[in-house]
Amino acid sequence: MTHYGKNTHLIDSDINVLFEELLEMNPDQFERWVIDLRKSVVDIWDNENVPPRRGKEDREIIDQWNKMCSYPIHKFTFTDELSDIEDDVIVNTSKLGVEADQWFPNMYKVRINYTEKDTGYSIYDLFADDKFKDRMVKGCNRHFKRDSMYLHAPSCIKNNKKTSLIDCEDAAEYVRTVKSNREIFGNHDFMLEQVKIKEGMNSGYNQVDHSNILQLTKEQVVSLKQDGILEYRHHSTFDIDDMPDDRVYSVRLYKKGNRIFPKGFAAFRIGYIQPAVNFPPMTAKYIWDRYTEEFKDDEVIKIYDPSAGWGGRILGAMSAKDDRKIHYIGTDPNPDNFYDDRSKYADIADFYNTKTYRGSGLFPDTNTYEIYQLGSEVIQHDPEFQKHKGEISVAFTSPPYFNREAYSEDENQSYKKHGSSYESWRDGFLQPTIETIAEWLRPNGYMIWNIADILNRGNYLPLEQDSINIAEQNGLKYLYTLKMRMEGMPGQNRVGEDGKPLCKNYCQVNGEYQKHEPIFVFKKVR
Image (tube, rainbow, N blue to C red):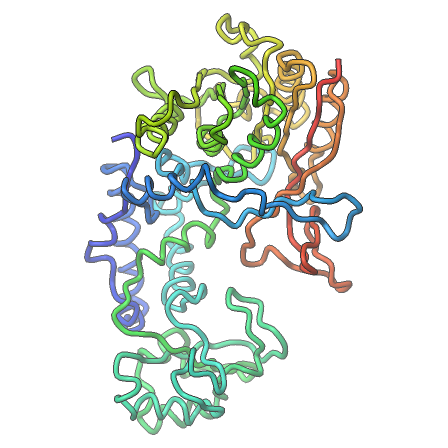
């Protein structure tokens, strides 16, 4: 098997309890559940090669990938209302192609570094290393038992039948009604969430004005407990015998019978540490289609991806418009992505070319590929790669952001090979990579370069400007910057007192601020 499927191993296991069963657990029982969960995840990962993700079966993947070629990617184009350049923002809301991740069960094993020191840890480490046990217990309590991502129990809104099933303005009255009116609430129950007394919008995953939420006071909770209305499951997420004076208790309604997974897999992706992420395949398709347009009459358009990553860009290339022939050339030194003289990139391309409509026999040929297990800073010495010199129409990649993501422990990874400092990595990896691109591009060929500055001990490392400088020093003309809107994450869109985002790169689309990463566009003019 070249890729994993749906994670039935965990979904169908005894560890996948009902949400209401978690609420019934006391602290010791819950800690035991987390310990068992961690062990189950590691056993499945190690023995079945399936990480803690939902996954899809082949028929679902094929159905999604069949839609990629004809998807209206022109709708991705928007204008940043803070600039005077039209159509400079890419807003990709499509999830087509994300299944490419299933060819890389090692993605969640990538360690994330936040300093120049190579001391980061991965999502796998959180499950496998006992030093993270207490952190996982605390995190699972937050994400699963307290349901901080609102996957099971949304807040009850006043006079809102959608969230509360009935119209009601008084929280105490509502709780009593849930307990007594089984005709309406028979397959539902409620939980209480302890929150600070606040006004205005909350800052959690579910953006709701506090004044609109059904909330109990401390005194009301005590009264309901004394009257026998509240049972342990209703208040198991806080200490009912030690309630602070500056807290209120939001009422949240859930439907019984829902298990923690598969919805709960989302917590591992965004709840603990930033995982390695794939470049969105449909954004890659947008880039390939847009910048190969002027070369579409060529017999074959050679494109180059210096950092093949997690397969998002090769999948985007395979699904390029049917009116052109693409030959994708990719490089990656990571031995984890190669086996038996094959690569996972080849597996993704072959799956697309044989399983989707492109393999129906109605098309004379499919887009092709060529993969090298070499780093982009040394690929220029490879005899086979040298035959493409001066023939690349578009080079497009998202290179390593210095040592932020430790893709593997192999010594040929750029963060190890050249990463004693940012400057040594820049000179040993970034510079020769861009120099090779400039030399291998054809006249009027494009370099499309997605990179962003990263914080290191409170200061930004200048990956963006260094990339521009190296490109221009090698005869590439900077044209403009595209802005790739990033998917919103909790805590990501913080704003300052002036109402503007605190992140470094942001734009405004339809009146809303959005975080983005730059994609620099260069052209070979000599």
